[in-house]
Length: 178
Image (cartoon, rainbow, N blue to C red):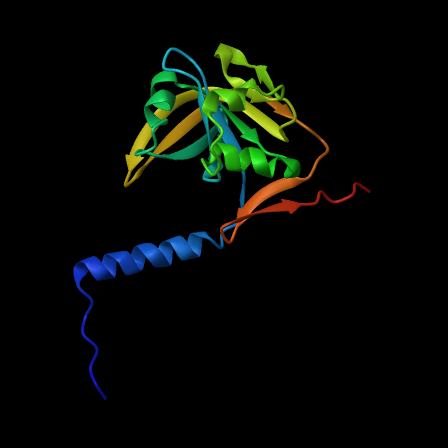
């Protein structure tokens, strides 16, 4: 039996990183488009790293890669909207994930947006839209965790969901009400 060599620190780190990324690919998550507007510009990103923190006051967190070109815009504007995407908006998710060549301003030119508080774009047919302000921002590794205190919430009672699982988008049918 030949003994195995211990992995170098860099190899062990990459292996742990790859294992973590593979494990996270198995975590089903809602797909959201996070938008902002203000003195630092208007932009949006697709994000699945969004979750509730507390309902008193209503606060959620959004994780955003610090190397993103839009990070400074979100950080500077402080006002955001978390738009929870319905199942039919997979293409919109792809646009805001940078998977297409559609420029940012063109994305906001489509007649699917309303102007929310502080001019933040709100997706008209989102399953839920949560407008609010970044009240805290923590840097953790490659990402910033933005804590968003919500001030205006809109919720639909119909429509299918859109999740990200196994590195793909999937439409989730809403159960029929009884």
